[in-house]
Image 1 (cartoon, rainbow over the protein chains, first blue to last red):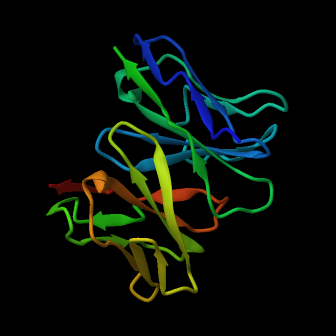
Image 2: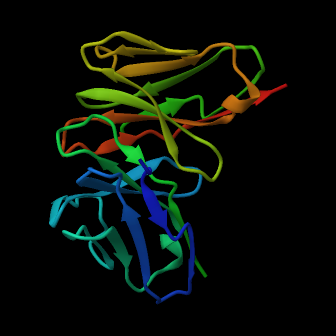
Length: 114
Length: 111
């Protein structure tokens, strides 16, 4: 059973470009969480999604950031018009349909904005 | 507000010694979890302690939880060089199941 997969692992963008980060949850998991980690800091919650629904987006910046988890395919975190302050590691976690205390984390995508 | 603030921020010990890390949080929790992160890598789940538990063991790990003080500690016994990593506590407050992470303790274990 493959773990949570994220791609790309490293992404470099210039200011103003768009960044798309993908997350494939573990098989059988229908809950996905996105977190952001700035250098030398802990992870900060961004958004919690279930298939085709955003459950909690209280940690998402109001502008430029969006997330989706379609019926088919991976979850996507999209950042439009990136700025240098968006440079961070973005982690995805998944958990199974029944309430689970444990989230399983992917290896992360490291975004660098030049 | 910041949940899960940890201390110390950094800890350097010699192999074979014990390492203790502390975590404080602000609101009620369902459970508290500890994760390890090796430099530049993802997070590995170590152990979970529920709000009605006071102590839990897993191998060389011992976690305590004091809900009256809103604090938890992680003890790693007989440390090894491979334990070198950052350790984070994460509070599950039951709000949409999101985790609120602390700032982490960077542990360095030297030979």
